[in-house]
Image 1 (cartoon, rainbow, N blue to C red):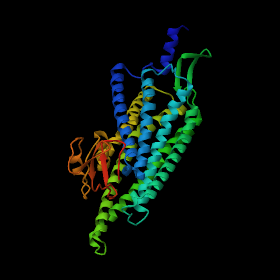
Image 2 (cartoon, rainbow, N blue to C red):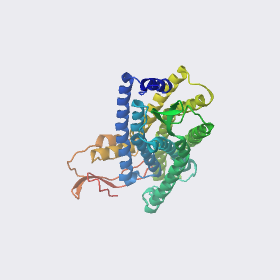
Image 3 (cartoon, rainbow, N blue to C red):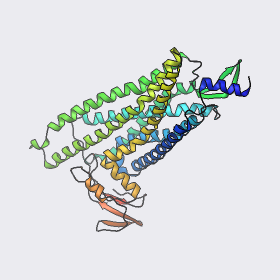
Image 4 (tube, helix red, strand yellow):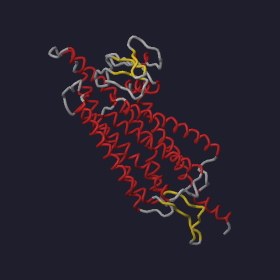
Length: 411
């Protein structure tokens, strides 16, 4: 058999080298690049904002920082290889190490993402439903408390990544460079990276089904139950108006209402993140299970190939789109994040939140002007604006100097 006949045989089994026609592939590549740019910028800014400003380093935000890191790794390490595969499905010429990393990295970041969602949901559940006591308004700015919170968050994040890597390793070990054989000889031009669908193994069923159940279905079930309990708790607490209790001081009444309002804002943002994650990841797991059970127990007909192709492309777009949407969710639903984003991007923003938590003054005052006012000062060559009372999402008041000098932040 000559080379032309070999290539025709390979194309009959594996399909064309390009996964799509150019009329579809070029627009899809443009969409991927736009998602990549927006996602990288948004997640980098999210990480820098949380690490830069100490008042942003709550335990929930540290978990969101880890989520941004997983999204960033997914975009930087996963999308280029995805585009390479779309343009050139075979022969795969990047080596076995890259082939297995192509499976290990996305699988690990996917597991880390869902475990992070479970962790900050548990944290919110314990904060809202675990204790009836109202937290001290100064506890977040206590050095010992802040350090302890960071240590707990870092410990949990390390555990998350450890379990994520353990869960991703089996599939990575089964991923290899495969070849079609003709007359007992491997066809080098047919090399592709992935599971050998022409030589299915029952071990795949154990690995993939376990991954879907352990790292998708069970976590989403736990998250749904916890948010249901949180919603009931908040609804019950809303009916208990603190103003109807004359034994409470006015400051305690305002603090209680402020904490309740801020908790609702945070929960709304986290629920939105979970809903977007679930929607974006359903096609991924559906395509994986379709590939698994057709390869093991059926034959790949033209109809099944088309369905698999549609699920593969939609899963790919939504998979990476989810990594780009989280920073937008933060900025849209959280006044605190939005103000921090503006402060970091513009270099100098005046933030003065009202006690009602609407954040309207934050949007009106955010600017990058160099001019000084009566509340401005020059410290170390940086123009700063003093915000007397900046109320965070937990009702904590702090005195902060917002500076153009990125190395300066005084509490």
